[in-house]
Length: 224
Image (cartoon, rainbow, N blue to C red):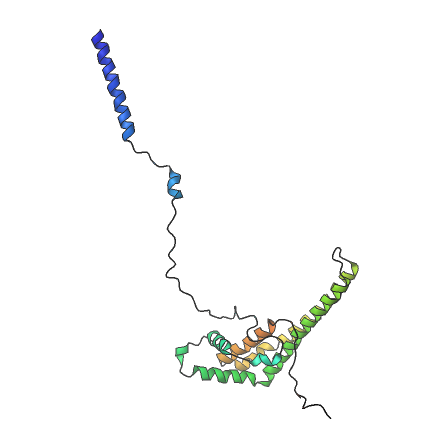
């Protein structure tokens, strides 16, 4: 009887010891979220290279070298403008050894065309009118507006200038209707066409300020 109990006790002891050893030898499995917490390798930016800005009809410069203050600046074309026109015309520098001189001649053809220059002057005048109406509205509102309440006088001023802006818009549409026909004068030369479009963009995006025209008859001095 005692021998049977001793054997049973030994068997149970061996089984318990085996379970403990098995449990100790097992490697715990990391939870799924541990893998997600590992930082991903940083992207390699060493190969990134700066790209040269390319101009298209959709990203023409806002004002460029035209300040809007002097109409005579509308025909200026510095180095930056020169490169813009070349890119807009889709002319590669290696396409012709004479492309720079071709571009210079194209610029002159736009500058010396009287009909196109008259159109630009008319478009500029409409731009000045918009600026003047906007300045008048701001001045008048400054005298009648109440910072705490909307007043009938303020609404009357807004109605007055809404009508003026509609008249100015109608004048702009009348002038702009001439543009397509006049630009056909330059359709055969992509340099001329793109420079003319750049001029229009300059006027359309020019800031309002102290505009002036050059004096066609400069004074030679005061009479004694």
